Image 1 (cartoon, rainbow, N blue to C red):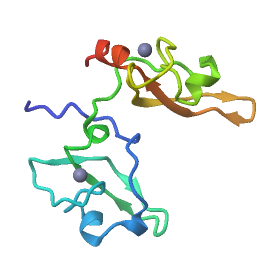
Image 2 (cartoon, protein in one colour):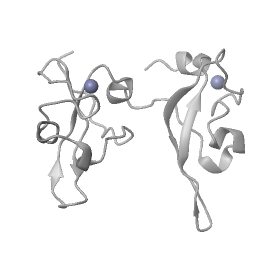
Image 3 (tube, rainbow, N blue to C red):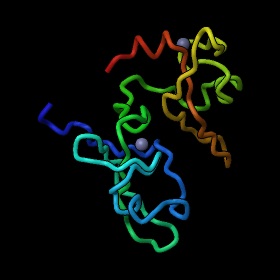
Image 4 (tube, helix red, strand yellow):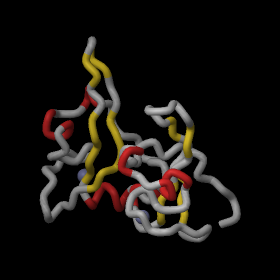
Length: 138
Ligand SMILES: [Zn+2]
Ligand SMILES: [Zn+2]
């Protein structure tokens, strides 16, 4: 793949607090998630971040062993948070088919449901069963 199609900021990837990172991780030389030394082949850019402490910008990188770091941007829309039932909002049920997530159905973090109700921010993690995740092949 020669094109760099992955333009979306992977803002969903959780990055450890900069306080817990080494200088090498802050420079992008090591994976911010596991600390392994990166090379061009293994590195994934996680997008520009702003450091809260110094308000400086930095560009964390991770290795490809972290599925959340290399996940393609979701093509299947995640329902709005207001449309989810409490079990879905808590991550107990699939956001798409509503099945209760168990060891058998699988549970996959697929992004975030966003929403606002009055003054309340309803943003929550979106989880899906393996069936729904498999159907949704980018
Ligand atoms: Zn890593
Ligand atoms: Zn499902």
